Length: 176
Image 1 (cartoon, rainbow, N blue to C red):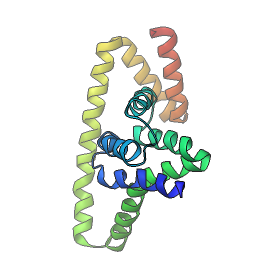
Image 2 (image 1 turned 90 degrees about the horizontal axis):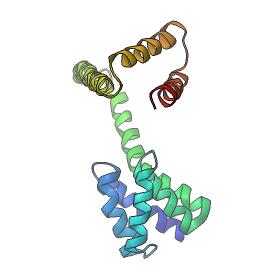
Image 3 (image 1 turned 180 degrees about the vertical axis):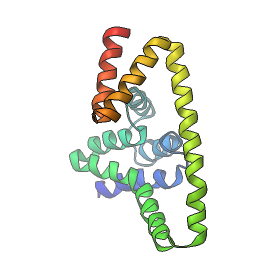
């Protein structure tokens, strides 16, 4: 029965929490503090503060922690699955609809219009990142890291994860 409760405690906020993890935090608090009584308000706030200090989505970290506390490893798995299940179901449904109507002129037109919008958004993000780096470490370091990264990924075909790790090491040793 505890696994069903864990599932419901995170599935319902996942459905109703439009806006992602931060939007679902009050809904999760209502479930785990008020409805099930698994945590006190103080414990929930401490868990939330600790979860915010760690990298990754807050909703899945809360679900994993609370699920583990209530039902062990299986409880953590159930909690995390319940958190991502609404998005997973919606994505599968939408993908099914898209595949069903992929030959439709409207769908083709829609994807034609979406591509430039995504390109512009990526360009704006790159522009913001560049000027943020420029203000933080200077133009020479920014250009060096950018050009070296480009060379490693495009010419030498180094995996981006290794390039990112190398940039982190470089930043920690040289810029830190």
